[in-house]
Image (spheres, rainbow, N blue to C red):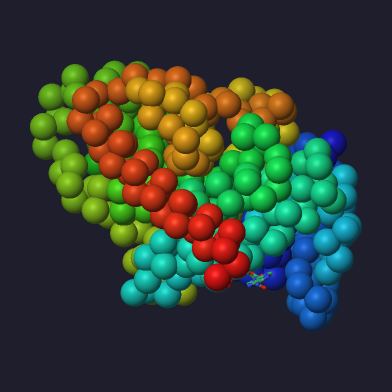
Length: 317
Ligand SMILES: NC(=O)C1=CN([C@@H]2O[C@H](COP(=O)(O)OP(=O)(O)OC[C@H]3O[C@@H](n4cnc5c(N)ncnc54)[C@H](O)[C@@H]3O)[C@@H](O)[C@H]2O)C=CC1
Ligand SMILES: O=C([O-])CC(=O)C(=O)O
């Protein structure tokens, strides 16, 4: 039975993640961490959460703290702290501000909870995953980000709706940046086990419209209701359940790759990875030439910004 801590637990994603995580059978304790000064909110979030347990039969223990030392003993630390974008901003616009927050916490978490996994949610998530990896001193298989799993969920729903099939019949993946340069893998998309391009109706799929919807999904939701909450909250729980349940599922998360995709690497970015109780392991893959080119572009974009961010952090600017 595991302890999962949430850093940023007073925020919108952090609060909903606390609910979804509390329902995972392998979770013994959900710990809500907030900055000093947020005691009242944390206490309220904990009480509200516990009120839901009688209805769902949940028996996780809920604790809260403003003392980072209390994260000691966590199996997974979910990081949702930092600024969220406004409708006109890109996720990359948040990089400098959030990198400072992530680097500071990651350094401390590396010492306080040396055996925990870090799951990054804060945007731009690929770059923040790399910052957390470097500043925590953890191993690459111990630090991962929500990445393109959420984008893959969005694409899956759109495909299921177009073909009027249950979502469980659709397998698909988006790799690359959790952002504009994301790359859908049509070569890895199946419906009812059939490769999608082998279905005659594939010719009528409005691929560009669908991808435009997936790319802009977060921004549209933020413009209308202020934040994306339930999609990310459920996605977070899926990744945590996969690790704690030692499920060996292959999910598309932001992870450090050396050369697993056509020898492209040295970056944290969305890739298919096998996930189990020992961590996150990117799966070597071969994809279509156009997909490789698009992935390479996405990698170069993220690697470039990551390097700029490391320079800023190192120079203390
Ligand atoms: N990777 C993904 O798919 C997703 C990522 N996100 C990202 O998650 C993050 C949180 O989003 P929301 O919960 O909507 O934001 P929010 O504003 O509701 O919550 C932010 C949380 O961070 C804390 N925080 C802010 N500045 C801090 C600092 N300097 N030190 C410590 N804690 C600090 C706040 O107290 C609050 O708990 C954002 O960066 C957002 O872009 C959100 C949804 C999906
Ligand atoms: O769009 C955002 O800023 C939040 C996010 O990453 C998402 O929901 O995909």
